Image 1 (cartoon, rainbow, N blue to C red):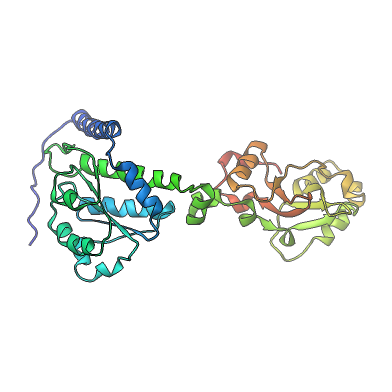
Image 2: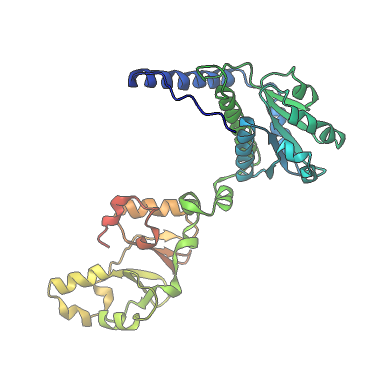
Length: 343
């Protein structure tokens, strides 16, 4: 049966609560400052080992250190280092089968004396698997059995009672991030690699190229610039999803202009109905903003916002349209101010 929590609480003022919160944040910040000034001596050796690892970086830990370990494993995996988390308790009940001959093991434990962790090590050592310890010092049981030690030093917990893992897990988290990101840099892991590992969400969307999200040319309204406005609209009518602009090409297929629904509305509002039966090249925008095929979507989004556009043609090296970005397809990735575009 779970023991009930005390019903009484200390009567502290909002000022006291904010003051304590600030002291906790400052104490954790001081922990990171000390760590930055005294990086573990084995850090560069571990970076080299991970960079050259042909297997997977297995990560293990229990309790709060285990949760930090799971985050470290996820960061490694998302930045180009194949990684899996192995719970030390589950390892003794079959998950040791996850280890391969070219893998290495990173173990997180502040004390370095965690029973479940130490019980797992003999089997790992027997296979010759390199062990990297993230721990407080290099004199504990875990550190003595490790190939390399990333020790972050004795740290007082920021918890007012000095008990709840706080400063120590902050140090583990920062050291793990530093390790994963330096390894990624040493492997030449770039923005496009990152995009390949993060295809979902707004982050992956902005790292994608325009070609991945544009409406292909065969789904856009494309017409010859020698036709009349009326002929152009009749010729591009159809059941496909409608965009707010027509891409106009010359005899060679190069983009020569763009004509938007807003342009049509302005002709009618200003009573220039006769223009409907004139060549559209006389009323089209002859120097439209374009973006080159292969451009990152984030660059195109900035262009849409800066120029206050609703549509942006995508062209190849020969100046031919390969598709078009439509702001209605990008809502969520475009700054709100660009939604006021006139077209």
